[in-house]
Every structure is written in C-alpha cells, then in structure tokens.
Length: 77
Image 1 (cartoon, helix red, strand yellow):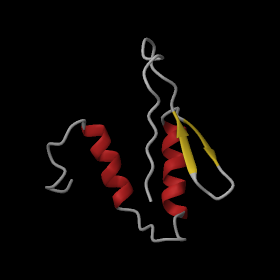
Image 2 (cartoon, helix red, strand yellow):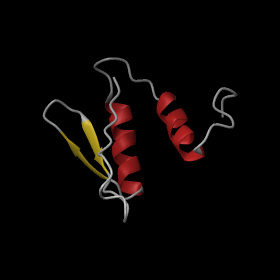
Image 3 (cartoon, one colour):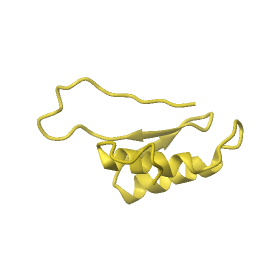
C-alpha cells in the first residue's frame, strides 16, 4: 500500500483504487482495466454491461431502505 493511501477510509474503496491504478491503461489500450472491472464485478455480485463503444458500466442496486436515495454515477477517463 502506498503511503499516500495509507489510513484513508473506507479502506475497501482505496484498496480497489490502488489495484486499478497499478494497471497500465493509456488511451486506446484499456483492455486490461476493463477485464479487471468485469472480473471484480463478477466476483462481488455486481451487475455490469458494456456499451457499443467499449465502456464498462457497473450496476449496483440500492440497499434495502436506500431505494429513495438519489442515483450515483461515477465516471473516469
């Protein structure tokens, strides 16, 4: 774990961030990070789909009692 990320919470978010950051993914060469996201989604029971231009979209339903909360969408490039 890098010193920059040590101690940040929630820990699971920063662990995943560090794993993604370790994958080379320059423009037009994102296959490995797409494969990581798909595998992570399958391992963790998170739905996903791919659109026509190759974006990987992870879909997580709201937890019980949180259905009325606003939808959250995160994007990175």
